Length: 270
Ligand SMILES: [Ca+2]
Image (cartoon, rainbow, N blue to C red; front, top):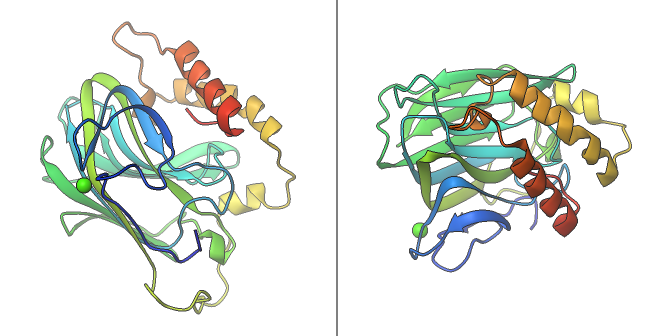
């Protein structure tokens, strides 16, 4: 896919660029549902995997009042902590409120800013939109602005940073997420492939961490335990990985999934 290609996935006939699937229910034409423990995402195989600045709109319905469902823009290079951007999650306080989060790598540790959305009802379909541009990320629900991030906003690949892939998770037997449409329109639409960049951008922290390092897929084998430890140590920081009903995070199952992905693709992803 060219850097400026627009994207539309209707789920009428397949999953488009979303090729990494796990326990996805596609029995209803035109939509897919993730329930229990399930995931789907575009392959995160490098810094230019996924999409850059532009407008992303997801028509989806999150069910439940616990952490579990998520709309996630995962770092193209599949490294975490990193520039993970979460357009939809549910708070862990039982209120059923929805929120969005911008993550970044701060000296090798996960850092994040989260904003709870006001007045967004669960259990019904909404249009969730992210507008990603230089120095600014805006989240909207049904066209209404819900969160704006202007600090620690990553640059995209075309501006010296990295792309993000489009992904969805559900990690709770009492929640689900149904997705009907995914649309991406690059910033500037049909503008030339080399848009005028605003002056000189300061590379975000993630670029400083990664730039210049030689990477191989073998490296990721050693990052998975660190990633899991980070999640386990900060359960409120990433509610997708709260302990299950038995109070134990099933790392064995997650590790098996990670290994299966690696053997199939050379890429580590839960
Ligand atoms: Ca559809």
